[in-house]
Length: 330
Ligand code: FES
Ligand SMILES: [Fe+2]
Image 1 (cartoon, rainbow, N blue to C red):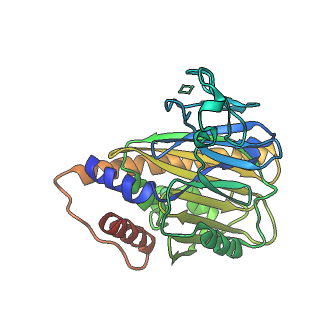
Image 2: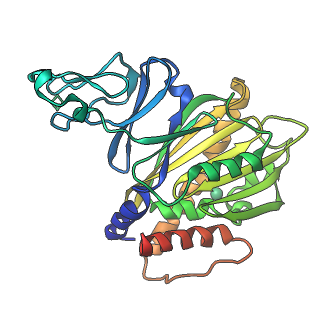
Image 3: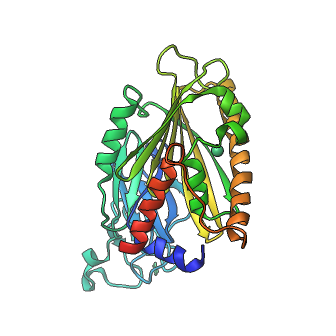
């Protein structure tokens, strides 16, 4: 788990993958924008005057200054360095210090970033890559039907910095084998015997039945299931009745990562929402503790390579095979 491997992962995996950016809910009005660093690349998503969504590298074409920070609303994108200005479609409009007639203005538009919107979630990718996220999302849509997130509202983000390699967090998420020991409350809320893992190309699914009385989720007579999707390499969708929680796992360095939880709900019911968020927080703290213990264990001289159960840890080996293949073959 050295920095050299992370460099290869960034080059072979993260620079070519689809990334979950935000929801359309978070840029609801013309001019609303949100910025983010994706694999060390500054990206901006902005709604134009006709409410179309545009994604660009958040970089001024004069001398390369990062344009905007955080999120907000803008009528035009003005660079704080020398004052060049772009419209909401990335066209250069004001060229302070330069005669517009004398430069080829169309060569200085903001550089577009490919994006795709699925059930209000906006995904972006920076380079051509190997898999088509539309196919993956269409399969997921079929599996979870009739659930749809189009009408869900974005609620909030909770972020965690964890002292472990990002893949330790992924491995831990990818099996329910540890639930009875590590998460007693979650174990009470689900039917552990029903827990299943299914693997697909570029993603996997774990699902189980929920015990509606002891779970914090919406009580409904049908579809009392939890779905845990992993979209390789680093997007998780946690789906339970009436709610979606997305997780993004961002490596910081070889031994730490950030994990962002974004919550979406079908109705804003404060009581149910706070129960849900507190429940997730408790489980997350249990997982953080385990992940940091694994980091310490893997760094010690007392461990070599271990073994994975073919019955209970197939999601882990499926992910590890994907990573190994990308590291070796790009
Ligand atoms: S770098 Fe943006 S105006 Fe100069
Ligand atoms: Fe866990």
